[in-house]
Structure formats: C-alpha cells, structure tokens
Image 1 (tube, rainbow, N blue to C red):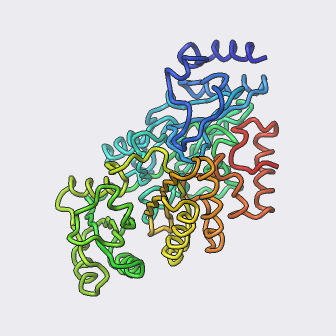
Image 2 (image 1 turned 180 degrees about the vertical axis):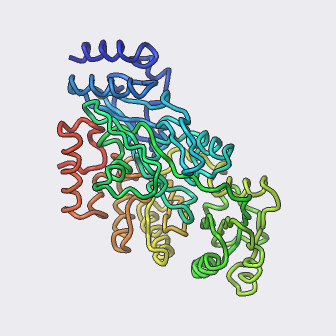
Length: 452
C-alpha cells in the first residue's frame, strides 16, 4: 500500500516534492525545536509547491489511509510538528510568497510557507505594520504561526495571531479545499471555521493561505531597559505606563535570565528585575522620570538609536547567551499578573527540590500574563526531568487560575496535562470537532488531545 501511495505522490509532486530515505534528512530538518524526536523516519517528506499539489497530496494520502503531519518552520517547542514512522511529513516550505497587499482594506494574503520576517518586510515596504512578531521571526512560517495561534511580543497592543487573521484557506484531510479569504472585519455569517482552525495544531486541516490584518506603519518606538526593586514595582510601573503611553511591549526578566542573556554589567547594581518597555508615539522619558522619583525604578537605560533598541531586544530574546541553551527545558504558561511573583518563588522551590543543582531562568510578556521558564536539571535524565518539571509547575498554574500553554500549544509534550486547563466536557467537545473534520483520525495523530 505504501509503495503505491509513494508512487502516486511522486507522480503528483515530482522529485523535489516527494522525498524518501536519506534524501529527507539531506533536504530538511524533520523535527521541531522541542528537543523531542520520533523513533525513526517518516515514510516520506512531501514539499508541495502549489495549492493544487497540497490538495492532491492530501487526497492521495486519504485514499491510502496515511497519517499526515503538517510542518511549518519547525520552531515550535511542543512536539506538534514531529512525524514518526509510517507517517507523512508535509512541509509547506516551498509554498511561500506574498500574493496580495490590499492597501485600501489594510490586509495581505500570504501563503502558509512564508517566513514571518519576509511578510513583515513586505508589509513595511508597502507602508504597513504586520503586528504579529515573534523571536523566531527569521524561521517561523505563517501557516505554523496560525496553526498554533502564536503570541509573541506585540500581544499587549495588537493581540495574538487569532486577532490578526481576517480569513484563511485550508485543505481538509480528504483533499477538499475550504477557502474563505475574507478581507473584511465584519463577517457575521454563522460558525467561524477560521477560529476552529487557528490553534488547531494541524489536527483538523492544512492551512494553506492566510489573510492578515495590517496596521499603519508607526514611527520608530522609544525603548528602555529599567531596573526595578521588586514585582510590586513592576505592576505599578505597568499600570502607570499603560495609562500614559501607547505601549507596544512590556517585558520582564528576572535577574538570572537578564544576566545569562548578556545583560550583566549594564546597570551599576544587579537589579532583581528588569523591564523592557517599548512605546509608540513618544512620552517615555517623562514616565521613567516619574517612576524613578516614585521609587518604582532604580535605574534606566533609554535607547538613543535603533541599534541600541535592537541590543535591548537581543538581551530579552537571549540571542547572545552566556551559556548553551540547547537541552534546557521550557515552560510557557499564562497567569494572572498578580500571581506571577508567587509562582516564580514557588516554582523555583519545587524545581530545586527536584534537583538542587538546577538553574532557573524566568522571563515573560508580563503585559499579557505570559511567563516563560527555561530550566536546567543536570541531576536528572532529560525526559524524566521534563515530566517532573511540568507536573510540579502545572499544579501551581491550575491553582492560580492560569493556562498550561500561553503560546506554543499542546503538541505531544503537554497532552497528558491538558486537563489542568480544560474540563472533561471541553475536551469531549474538542474530540467531537476533530471527528467532524477528520473522522479517520489521520491528521497529525497523537497531538493536542490526550490519549483515551
């Protein structure tokens, strides 16, 4: 059966579009950035170059009963894009490009394999801002961003990916195409299938085209790094900044993360917390002066150029770390802002109880309640440490009324813990929705929904 399917796929996609054996690993990375690997290679790596080829590939796989795992830029941290033996990896990398920029509507139509930074630059050349922005902008792809409802660093002002998608096109498991490339904001015509597909992690269909909302291109923002004495000061500064500024980002770094990411020595004294503020429209300096007088900040660095602002962001994004980040365990949770400091203290204590030699690096988009943890547990096996870390942390998340996944989705890593954030009835409804789209259960199997 697989030989016949591969023959059909090769005929439909050509030699560059259907790779098997060693050609797969030579052409592309097959796994995401989570550190998890499937045991063995997928049956094939498909790399269709057109929408028709994607539909044809899905129809062929459907006829032959093959499971399909959609892949974007493979920058995810939840294992959602990893394909295993007997499965088909479907990469959207060759289906890329900006199809249309509609200046009147403030929208752009983008193919799923388009790298985010490419789309951002195209929007800027047309005089617009594409408000979705992630640290992985140079490698993540639009289709994957939409499939995981990625958040990023502009959520405070512009919302998550979901808030910036006007319409989309997708290929169903049997090869049928549903296309609603809507460019209008108001479209009150019944069930919004768009929102079912956004965040579905490839378990319902393959997203192929997306209509993204554009905003007017703002003037260069003002950016500052601020040293703060405690988290109460962080909350107070955020409230004042929100009231007085047009905030586009408000990022917090605990001391260990700030120094590990290259910030050591920037301030005369080592601050417990550092906040990166970005504001559009000016007015940042007077706010910082007032915060200093009120004791909310102990020191501040206001970027004097675009290069200095980029340097501040490089620290926040750990682009020049003082240690190797490979192998670190990652948590990505949402919490009420007031619960962040207690969570950091309690989670650190639990991590150190698991491994006294552990390192913990906390940072996040405090303006939208998203907190990240990178942890090293050298005394534990990597996989055992990951499971123990999640179990310890997610109990705290549930108690605080938060979410076990703020940005990176569920994938395989968080499947066993989905019940910490979703009720049994909610999960049952999710299963029912999947059964409508994918009755045979062949779209990205083993991802998102817990095993029954």
